[in-house]
Length: 234
Image 1 (tube, rainbow, N blue to C red):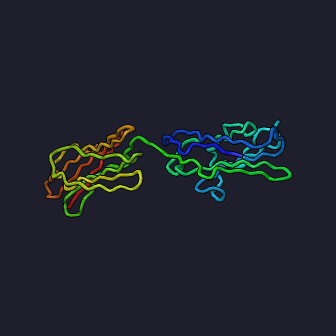
Image 2 (cartoon, rainbow, N blue to C red):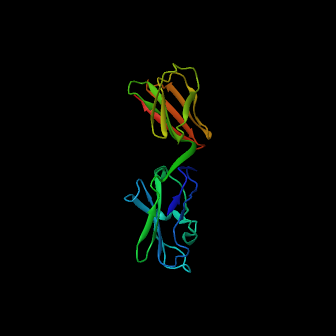
Image 3 (spheres, one colour):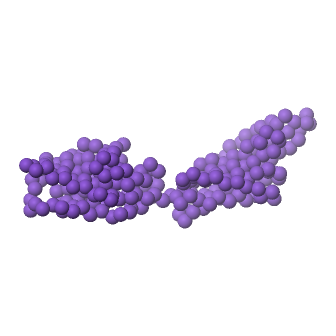
């Protein structure tokens, strides 16, 4: 018995990836029930995300479990190939995967990859939020949040300012704030990693009206979508 899998596979967020798995067994032929299983997190006891059963060599492996219907068998288990495809990759798919084959008979033979395949995800940057917020004391800050893998580097550009910034990150998501906006104009957030770049822009204008109230006009232009917001600061 043996199971052959790569130690690592890389896929791109939103696309599909193939997890290869082949095996050998000591029988010249095997015409009884065969079960193919893929699980995540840990071998033997991990959550099953795919399972198919073939009753004989003349029967295809019929899917019994396919989590969220995103796992598809590519290989032919009767030809010692358990390879699967995962569609529409999401962040939660970045797991360790284990393939398993079970052959039924007088002695129930079963074999599973012990080390499994680690699925790594890559993703070009995407700006998921860009805004200007009030600090409550008639000062304002611009905030930009982007995601990607590796986590992108964020840069603010725009009118002269204090250049006082703060950055926080968690996993594949990064937020960068530009503190104490003092000049009207266009502020652009750029997110960059090794797989691409993305930009979002906010236009910040503040002026004093005749009633001594401050009117703030913000025009957000993230990902090509324009939103005009009027705020009154008393």
